[in-house]
Image (cartoon, rainbow, N blue to C red; front, top):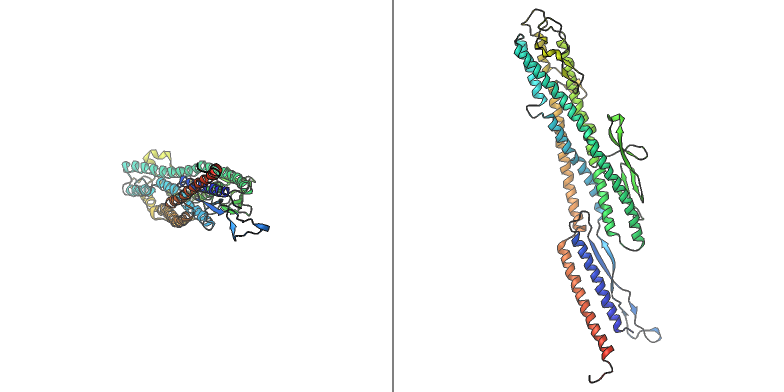
Length: 470
């Protein structure tokens, strides 16, 4: 038969259950701004009821006696439906967004929109040859031509060296990113083991799950990683169709020079295979800039410089200088990095402006060189003049910049939408937490008042029964 002490037990359990629920609210409020935190909820359940005892085991009163409440579990709000698409959009967004800064840097190196652009130098170069063809004996024009040619050659060389140095600058960042991936993989493997242990004990590893999800998002951001939860609760993480983490085991990545790519840093698995990345994550975006866009820019520079060197030299060596000597090579080198003006041109009279000896007024060779401005040549990118190639180079880079901006913006819009939907489920709503706090507080106060009443009843039975008139 129930006694007063059953009531005390129920009141105490109510106090403890609501105290635990208040602690969950406190934890939610404390982590309202913690990245990757999933709000939690104390799920309460009534204790198992028992039948009223009676004669011959049968209760004279129908029904069972309740035995109070307890916190069945602390539930972690999660929305698995949105996790995979959110990570995919995050990886896609970072792929395009990570390209913008280096592309803008490359645009600054080329400086085609300024007066120091190669197009401006080329226009001056052709103009000086035209002026020389009109007045071959003018030594001032010859001196200006040499100075401009040196500036033009330096412009090619500087841009080529800067773009090459920029390609190598990615190596340092790549090493740091790979180290982040290795650390995250190790931590996920450790968390897999800890989560399995906590679950085996019957508890909910909510904060450990938050930490694991945060690490997976880091891997998605860096390398477009995907994760699949196993039946055991572990997650298997993959990058580029290669397993990174499986259970409590993980593979490592390493950075080493790739002889097939100018000894630039490349990423390899610990089994020696090269990491293959899709169009996802910051690393893939940066490698695309380094190994595709910048290579294309350098190739265009080299094609323009090579044609300039060979075409000008072919005409210049067919003429004679002011000393009636055969014209020498005007440019030395073979590409944008090595192009330079032959030092013999420091004497401007060594410029072969004409084709006839003892003809100071002959500017036929200078005119033919000036006409090279409109001559075209076949390249891997199409048929261009030297000026046309420089313009096409700047246009190609501008198109890459605009494409990266537009794609990053598109994926950001989808990412924001998914983030809002996910946050509406798993995020902490302070107004809702305040309402829950009041609810649990009122229940706690009611249970405390009940306990006080039961204590007074117990005092009446223990200390006052049997004493009359006192």
